[in-house]
Length: 294
Image 1: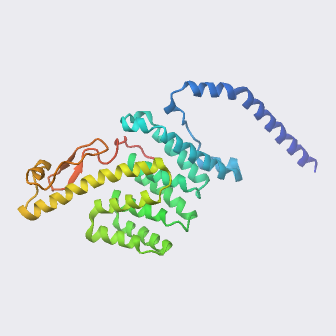
Image 2 (image 1 turned 30 degrees about the vertical axis):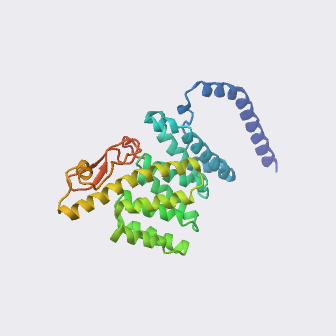
Image 3 (image 1 turned 90 degrees about the vertical axis):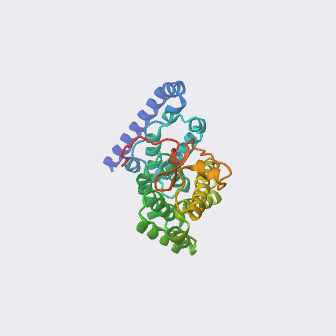
């Protein structure tokens, strides 16, 4: 009984000391943050496993806060993205923040939506995104969108069609709809890679609530529709002349294209030596320097 009382007294002393330290240093910290450029304000976030131990039941709220913080931070960077000033975006710290958010609260839908929208496409770290999605899928067992994202990532980015089919099958079973099975079939036998991506993005635009994330998908959709338009022109040219066009200008010359679509990422569409349509942008604003994200 006495030991219990001492323990409670010690906890009270520690808590009081922390409050005093916060009162003393918080104004200084706040002023320092206000002086720093906006892009530096995200900062480093401790790993979620560490937070879980410290926060206990409060981890759910902190997880949602970190997700909200990440989305607001990235939304404020729209001008930097449009101007291609990518060094002003803390992508690594952003990933760590959203990773911690998901580890603390895997039920938060906004967190994994944001991770998929940002890190699969803009940054190109698909495997890191997939790790987060697989973690979320253990908890959001009713949510067909998580395996849907995984299926798309494996098919479109990683070219692992066996795993893609596996996750599409799970999405189909959860949703009770054959939509995802049909998407996979269309990819394997009819539509091709670009058609799959277009269907995926159209689905995402319909089901996404956040305007900032929806805008990202709309830009990607426009880019892929441009490449798909050229692909169809190449196919028509090939059927008529039994060869691949030398370049896109040939398609204009023979009337297979009225004009060359613009890549919203700032790249230039071209036809490679195998007759495949590509873009110099690679459908991302910037190819990030490779860095392994655990």
